[in-house]
Image (cartoon, rainbow, N blue to C red; front, side, top):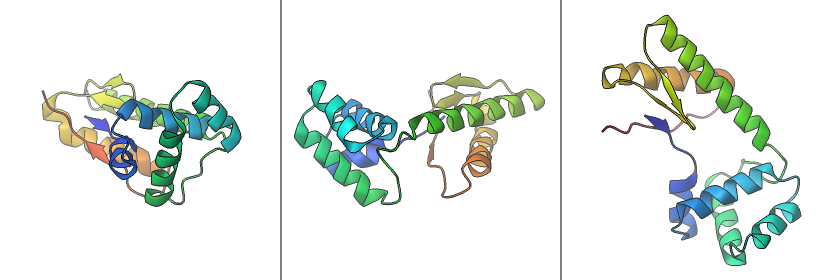
Length: 139
């Protein structure tokens, strides 16, 4: 099971059919102090001006309240870590094995419903607005 990020939706909206590019844009844009610093980093890596513009417009269209270019990325990583830690601790209390995998967790299929609920509760507790989009991957 994993919590999806913005990338799949933004790929469709932007017309940039490269998940790594979209994920890179979000990482750069949320981690940069300013749009100019984000553009500089993006352009130096040779990712293409048109891709930057297309993905930026897709983000603005789909998530107009999302603040980019204000160095929020570190806060997001800290929130994500706190949420995953709490889900893992809740799993220990319930005798459920929870393995962190990047921004996701792995559990036994029999614990799938519990995991979805625990991840949703973690989002609500730490973020307090919106709904997390959760996706379940099965072998």
